[in-house]
Length: 114
Length: 97
Length: 315
Image (cartoon, rainbow over all chains, first blue to last red):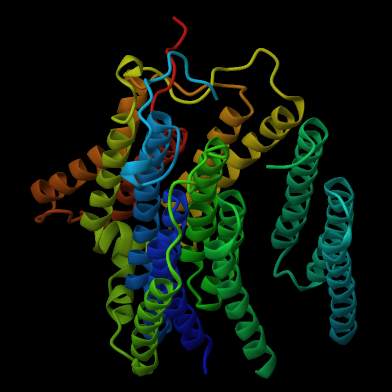
């Protein structure tokens, strides 16, 4: 079993792990973490496709590598937006849960406290 | 000659790994945060120094060797500062996070 | 090569174990720290896959900047009584979810195992025209030359993310500044780190951007390091985040995609096709585009991490 196949299998396992974390955990921040885990697993599967495309003297096909680089940056941008949403939810309701019955309506604070 | 260099590298890197192991044992076994920080910073910095020392003869060029030393210096800077900050937080709040 | 295979196996198991800890750890802060460690280990896996550019990006952006974002969020929400109102998922439901996830993982694993050993590859084509672009690093050539349109759209996505984050400000803070104000007496340890690290980091960031034309590196990795230097200076409160209405900030944010698009349109006018580079002049054009990309990334990433405006700037 080559290192590329092993990395691909780890990537597949991480996708399953991340999916479980995304569905089964309650806190939105943990969901974002699990989502990032899933994303990096998908990138690892890309990585094995790139490695198996080694040809013409290159150790790894550059096109999937460029896609993964793009994917990492876009995943960060999406995580930043998601975290900003969660923090705004926390500011508005005092808790970080997605259960609408638990949202206690409070008036917005007069002064933001860190 | 290159056999001597290889032996030197293996010994230095093994010593470095041993120090890392010691630091990790300290992390797992010491009772409170400050003593764990002590174990980590001392042992890990020495371990990294030995690993870098073992890698220096195998660097491709003097520039690469200088880069290895720069990495060691930067890691020392970062870990020293982080240990200070964590120690300060522990002293102030009694716990970290 | 048994030793190398053992190393790979150990690394793979470690990555999976730290990932599992990220999902199942007790508190969100511990999970976030686990995620940073996971990202760094993942960079090692990318090195083993011979994708050094991706390893650099994963360490800088995937683990570094994302970890900073998540640790900041976890620290600010530390005291939230969160799941007190949620009833935990029942056992059989958890089992069903786990079974579904195992099924997905097995399907992906089957795909991975069924991949042909020397599959279709675009490596020969990438190398074929590499000399004309003047670059030595095929990944940079793919990003800026062959698939320049994708990279430009990715820069636009970053700008959209900043717009989205800024729009989450409270109405009275619109146009204000994110983060905390500059401190009169910044904390000495962090200030020392920022003052020593920032000049070195800027040097390293510019070097990685410049050397990305021929060796692993590039605009995203260099820009991420520059962004990290600005962020550490802001974290040490030696400098404060600018007001979001500041014109220079908005210009710097859009400079990257605008220059990129202008280069593409200029290619249509001067070189015979959208995003065509004039032959013999390709490398200067590419480096010109990349310089503005680095500027945009170095300004966008800290704005995404510091979040929506939270205070009014002192006039």
